[in-house]
Image (spheres, rainbow, N blue to C red):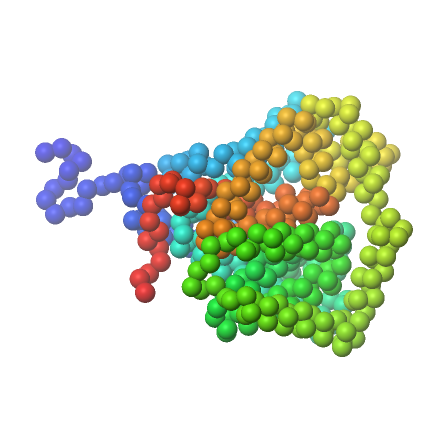
Length: 429
């Protein structure tokens, strides 16, 4: 008798790398931890008394668990060439940084965390039930954030929002501090609006619609023009693509969608026109838009763009990841700022080759994400679209939520003939 067979009545030992998927305690724990990570993502800046974010600690735990399922992770990564191309684009910038280190290594550490987090989500990105569960978890966490935001405003007024450069919103709740970028609010809206217009459940549609109203007001209070324009562009894309999505018996009718959309508009309109806070908000946003259109106020972005293009012309092969800010500072004699356009930043840092890798990777992810949406109507696609538009005004590709949505859009859908193991994590009905 071989040693591996064991004695009669014993269960033969199976190495975790050889155990069938969703057949071990490790898989159960990993799904729980990844779900908790999804919950923490809309609250990316959620910290306790200045400590690290919850996402950071959960990522460490997930990294330890995913090691035991490494073959599955590697197989999914191989099936996601778009993600590999994105990693290569930023990796080229890292290589160039070590040839010519100028800035500090903090940005390199952040990039490594983003890549590892995205890889961990790739483990579960092809499991249908898990994908649906993660989507609802994300919506719940995002709803909590925007609701807490509005509660603060109602209690303390607009001063409750500490709007820093880039539209960062900080809210103090007891011993907790929530700091979220307007990009996180906009991405949640790009997820929730199609959801509110597609579900047949009246109760669920009412809850999602309420979250959309709260999120819309939160985004407006943040006052970020780039996020507002990005959301308009993403929803315009949804309006064009949605009619081609496969309809299911859970999909709302056209009349129901129209009624829901009208209710959303009325809710936002009433708050903006019939409340003191709303009126001051409209006046403030009107002034900012006027400055943008008539006075060309783009927060000095034009100067930064010119400096970045000059740096690229001098170094077409790239200056290295994280080096663009100090180089712009030297170029502008002390103004140390980023490019305010992440695509331009990649072009400068990773060179022409890195920019080509980036756009090829995004094209593959967009193609596969669109197929997922058309087949299932699971809306991981339009939050990603929003973030890609938003990246033209800020460094949105360095957000954790961006890499989460990249991972969830990067694999081939089930109908394309790819082998996908069953998701047995959902209990039977």
